[in-house]
Image 1 (cartoon, rainbow, N blue to C red):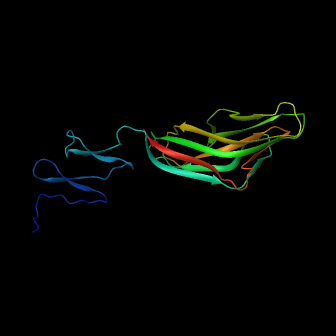
Image 2: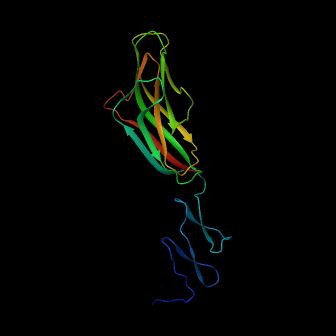
Length: 198
């Protein structure tokens, strides 16, 4: 048997909930305006319910990965994008983004002159996140020297935006140094961005 009530309120929008209002009638509760919010009990609300951010913080809301299988060789004395990038769109401006990256490098010093080092760094857009010359490989005064190594790191960022945000690895070399990212053609360089709900 179906019972109808003249004082029942019908939902008029996608995701709207019909809830009691404590006066033997019903009202509606609109869908949460922020993705990831949970329906919680709150006696101070007229309906006894409200949408709220998950309690406790520190929860991973989304994970995005970027990869690079081809190599990139820095050829200029200015910071240059390597092609290892990842983009993420935070659901709230208060969210943090935890970035992990891993790749291998080969560095080569061809002459005993000029600027004898190269570096790599993590940037958000055009903002250097870990400080200038973060991943420095310094050859001092030497000729025909190689250095191979795996590079890994993490950074917890607060982008304070809900717009698409790009994180990338850049490289810089001196005038007699060569640096190649992902010199092992069979390997995969990766950069992972995770939105952390605060």
